[in-house]
Image (cartoon, rainbow, N blue to C red; front, side):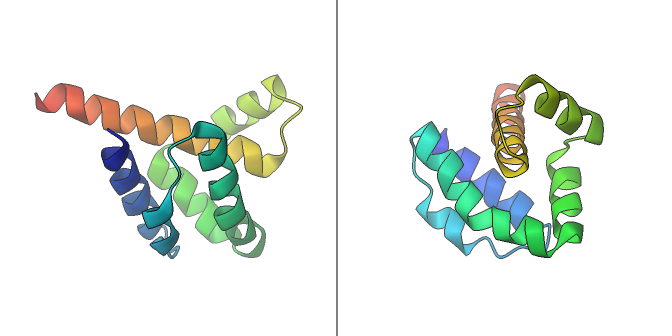
Length: 102
């Protein structure tokens, strides 16, 4: 399942015009994964808002979802909020694809 997650994440990142080479080294632990993605994607978010918007669109995270998650988790910074939502949504996509392909 993790390899399916990694492949989907890589596909979504590449489709957003972001270099996804780093996805080959994803850690399996959730906290390490979250921190790893923040480390690699936060600079992109800060330097290229278009790539951020494209990635959110590609992963299917609406502004309302982003705002709601941020309001419910005020202890998280913007990058942490975005990364948590990306992980959750990519995992949902993988689970649904696997469920309906069987």
